[in-house]
Amino acid sequence: MSLETVEPRPSDPIVRSASWLVIFVLATFILKSLSFLFVPFAIAILLVYAMGIPLNFLQKFNIPNFMRIILVVLAVLGCIFLLGRLLASNINEFNRQLPIFEEKFWIYAKNLLALVEMTPTEAREIYSSFMATFNKADLKPLGSIIQHMGGSLFSFLGNTMWVLLFMMFILAEWDDFPRRVSRAVGKNAARPILKSSARINHAVQHYLGLKTAISAGTGLLVTIVLSIMGVPFALLWGVLAFLLNFIPNIGSLISVVPPVAITLFDSGSVGRTMLTAVLLITIQLVMGNFVEPKVMGKGLNLSPLVVLLSLLFWGWMWGIPGMLLSVPLTAAIKIAMEQVEATKPLAALLAGS
Image (tube, rainbow, N blue to C red; front, side):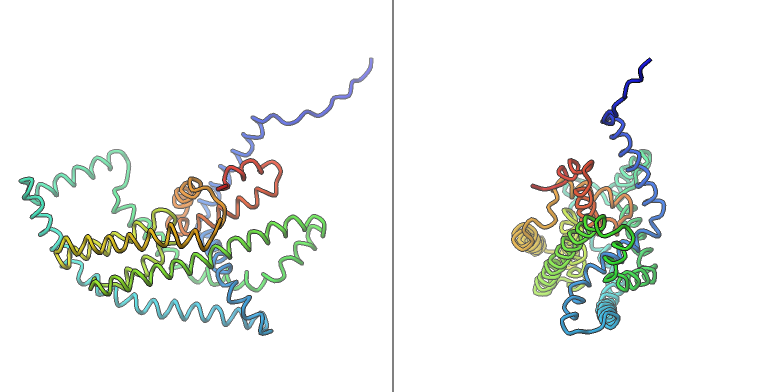
């Protein structure tokens, strides 16, 4: 009786797909369950990339690594402190005047409702019924969602010490990372790992540097325009435009709403409100559709649909911090998948062109 040699068959595509699906589900579960650890760690890595530009600049002056880290961290903390002081005064004043704006809102609403022969009491009842429909469908109203997302952001800010701790250790180990990888897996095996790491470093740092500059320009223009228009809390809305510009697609649109609403409540002029809205939308369109593509080129080479889906996914995972991290994280995952033969087709699907 002769024994026939059985040649190994390629794995079934269905089995491979199921395996990757299981890995994805497990990774999602772990990342969401341990968000209290991964969110500050991911933010720390993002800050390290952002600080890589001044660190590389200081390296030209032969400043020791630990001194460069201390100088950059102190500079960042100083900027945050000064900006925080300015914002704190604006936010306190805004909270103080909020009841006044709310009272003005219902005055304008009453005038508008009079056109359709409806009282503010009836409008409040309709609003309550509308929100009750969402509650029955187990969906949170917009206010609750914003409050929840804001709470997750403030919870993250409360853990700033963890971010700083992670950041200091990552910066201290950053220059030694290639040697450690080579020692761990050998020089030959380390080459593709270090190559992917270098691509991720360059892509994310390039994106963050230019995105920060463009967002700062957007925030500055918004502050100047609102100051000229006499809109209250112009600095607050400018900083909001700067921060929300890091959230792709929807961030710039959301940043327009508060200053336009405040303009209406403060002035009562529909014409002035429309002019403010047109100017702010023009700034966002010019910066987002002309300046940013011109400056960034292909950027991280992600499909617009992938950017939107990643925004929804990471926002669901980690709230506002996840939205801020969505583009760099997705780009890093895409670059890593390009180095693995089995995931190259999926990486090609994520690419923009």
